Image 1 (cartoon, rainbow, N blue to C red):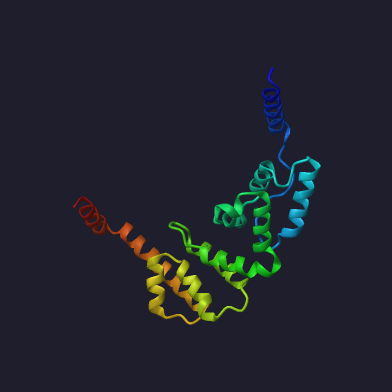
Image 2 (cartoon, helix red, strand yellow):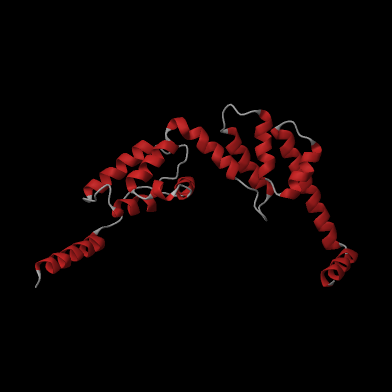
Length: 206
């Protein structure tokens, strides 16, 4: 058999063997929460790679790294330019840059700007989560705090709250709750009013 052909078969066999014997590393996923320490986590990750004799710049290392990232951290990595997440070393550098203690304020602000009041989500769930996120921000103007709260709400809520001209987060929250309560009462009235049901049926058939 040709020497080069034999070497090619051997390399293919080695790759297949490595693919089957390599097991996922045993490490908790990194979410990017306040309690997560990116340096500590990456040290443990590198130790796990070394224990399994996985090269830190290999595709296997990249695969193991990406499957052990979740939550906000996963969303952050997915939003990066392709070249910044093409290798394990690049992804680790991006994680260090984003989740080091000096950059955590940016991460908190990102969580606030991405939070939206979903259709069908109870208002109290949105309020509880958003207020919790806003309270973690440092050195943010009062107007920006309740501004973020309003921006995350559904359009119909935004319109009514802006009419109330709130000056604090508490006032914005109360305005949202008042409108939510009014909407629920109106909805219940329509369901119990036979005439409203008839009008809705006529409108739907037009």
